[in-house]
Length: 381
Image 1 (cartoon, rainbow, N blue to C red):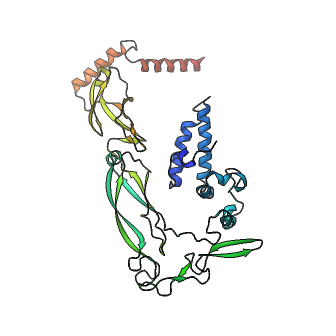
Image 2: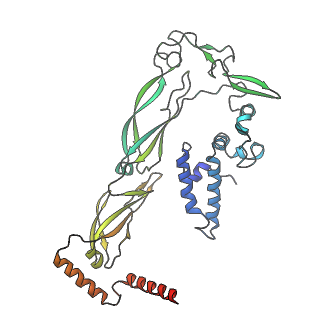
Image 3: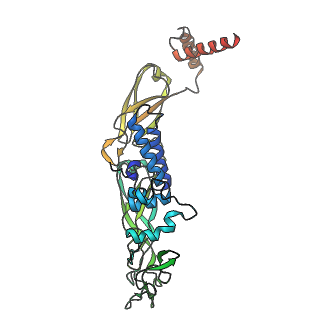
């Protein structure tokens, strides 16, 4: 049976960074751990699957091998298991023999074929309000980057001239070096892998084919994005110059602190202060939601820190628009302050009548008192 994609197992994109990768794995591990799911074989299998995925993707060398070859990187003669690409020494197996395997499998510019140059990927940190993240929005950003020089169209050569073939690698961008029994390919030191040299460089980019610019972009933010989510803008990274392709831009989302709500995935949480009287007698409260006001019924005798759930008042799932989270309201009793003399007298009278009830009005307090008495009785005996 074919294995699932490691990125899919952990619910992350291929551009995920180490911190977010670890966060995603910890969420899954806490949910699926055998201690939390005793006798659940399916949860145990998923836990092992997530651990295997994290073991590979959290290791930079193994992850690079997986991105290039998939699961085949750790099967048969290519590594022999998830640890197969971990090498002895500083460079590791993949670094030492990477170019040789490139010749065999057609990667790494082997076999005399030049890989197309690619510009660097960029990251932009975007801070959003909770409302914008929940509802979705469109924002304008300015990204500093290296872009293709307009004067020479990215070639690096002065207009009217053109780059010439590198005499060292003959346009291949790679040179072959004999190291003992092995023949290893590496980037040409003369042209740095471009395959061309420039005798008459462009005056604006000085032969680099790239110039600095501040690129203005409009970014559509889908409804439901969360802290750490990334939006990929293909081709909006840096130019490679010399006819290469642009890298990508990753817009990384962070959320501003909200005055009322905190967010946990697709669920929202808030704390609602409530009077002692309403807790005891019951009543109806008006609570905020991101869609407006909602009514919350409080039963008589509600205890402080009671959690009330309002279904469908949370956040839309960014990957499943049909699923919406919930709003959890925690009611916390607010102790009266600045009491008048008469109010204090009434509170005292109330307290006396409550205690005269033999504990039936305060079951938790009565139970606590019994436990304390039993504790000290045990010490004495």
